[in-house]
Length: 307
Image 1 (cartoon, rainbow, N blue to C red):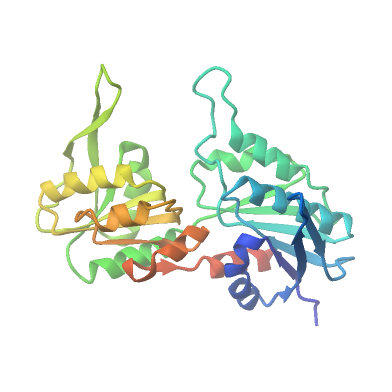
Image 2: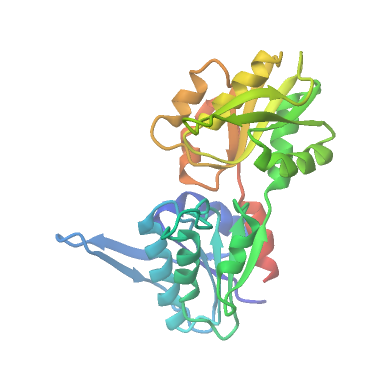
C-alpha cells in the first residue's frame, strides 16, 4: 500500500484543508505557530517530510499569505520532501499582471517569482492554480516549477443551473472583457449569453453602461465574473439588466473576495438577488444564506492525486 501524501496548510486556508485531506486521502501535517512580542512570526513544521510527497495548500489573499506559503514551501523542500505540490485556490495580485503606466510593478509576476524561488524537489515541484484572472499568469513561474491551471467551470455551471430552476436563463457578463468566457459557459449550460455596452466619458474617464446586447425581458439573468471585490461593476451591470426587463439577477464568481461591506452593498441594493461562487477565498465564508458556495476541494484533490 502506497504512503499517502502529507498535507500542510497556511493559516488562512485551514478551513479548506480538512475537506481536501478527506477527498484526496491525504495525511494531515501540523504546524506550530506563535508570534513574538516584536511581531516576528515563529513557525515549526512538524512531521518528517524526508522522501514523502508533500502537498502545501495556500491561497494568497494577503502579503502575509504569500510569505507564509514561501516559508512553508522552503521548509518542506529543504527538509527532504521527495516532491512538493502547491495548491493555490486564489492567486493574489492577479489583476496586476501587466504594466500600463511607466514604472508600475507587475506584482503578479514578482509573486510568481517568489514562489518559484522555493527549492525544487527531486521528484518535482508543481503549482496548481485555480481560475486565474489571466491565463498567462501560469507562465510567470520559472521552469523548475511545473504549473497547472485548474478550471472551476463545472462548479459555476452547477450553480447557474440551480439558479435557473428550469426557467429561461441568460448568462451575463459585466463587461466585454469577460464576454468570451461567458459565451463558452453559456454553450455548456445551454442558455443565451449577454453582455453590456460601456462608454467612457472623454472628460472624466468614467465608464457608463449604454445598453444590453440581448433580450432579457422576463428572464433570469446570472452575472458571471472571475472575482467579486467591491462589486461596483456588478451593480452597474445588474441595473442595466433590470432596466431591460430581467425578473431576477444573480451574481456568480469563481473567487468571492468581498472585502469590507461589499456583500452588504450587493445584497441591500435591491438589484442582486443572490451572491454565489466557490470557497477559493476566505471571503466566501461571509455569504451564509445569501447565496450558494461550492467547494473546490474535489477539483484540487482530483488533480493532486494525478501528480
